[in-house]
Length: 292
Picture 1 (cartoon, rainbow, N blue to C red):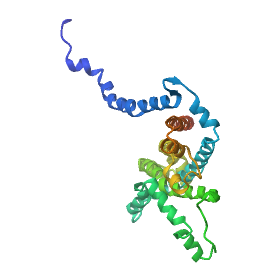
Picture 2 (picture 1 turned 45 degrees about the horizontal axis):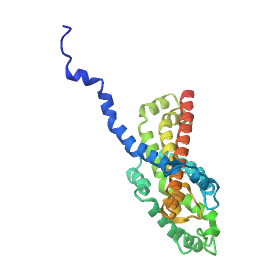
Picture 3 (picture 1 turned 180 degrees about the vertical axis):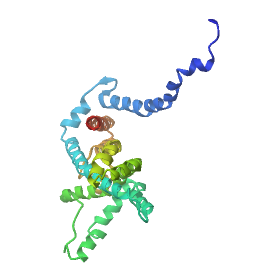
Picture 4 (picture 1 turned 30 degrees about the vertical axis):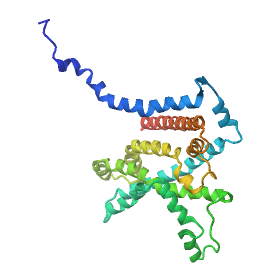
């Protein structure tokens, strides 16, 4: 009995979980780990020696727009994310009630997802230009007599507004898809039970919809925040470097000035900010789960 050979499948059974994880692990190593190591090498090493030259240039050089880029990136995120989440949440709640033409309405809402950020920027650049649809509409309605100028270094606040409008139009659908999917996963039995006990619409939302939608809301916030700190195409199309952002400055340093080390440092900072904010979101929502 003691000399019986253990079947081959039994031998390898304990290794199966590791084998199943291998594709994801290889993906992380080659597409996340390796680029991260390369970025650190470019940012902090030159000719094989450690250097802080790129850090000093980024933070202290008068030629660097890092602090302006950080300010505008944070401002854009602070404006865009709450608006998108609020609008997407409201639309998702409306779309959660079946009505005639429901599917067509949903497809119309997610249509901007098929448009690239650069294309979206070009569309709104034309619409908001002095001779564009927006100004012509306001002039014909008698609301304004002269066209509103959204673009140009002298109109930085209006450029900022144009970017917010374009991003909200372009990317709110991402948040909507996540929240709408979360709403669809809530069983109708919960609503029926709430009706039996005489719950008001507000009580249904507070005690059923919102708690059960928290995982989807967390995912939407994390994904949208990551995208917000990588915002580039819309800003570059509408404002160029009039409104610098972190990703835009990384692009400029790499393609125009060929400062690979500085561009890598920008990328590392964007990644660090994204990780920190993702961690904060996770902690906040974890605390909310415990309270619930």
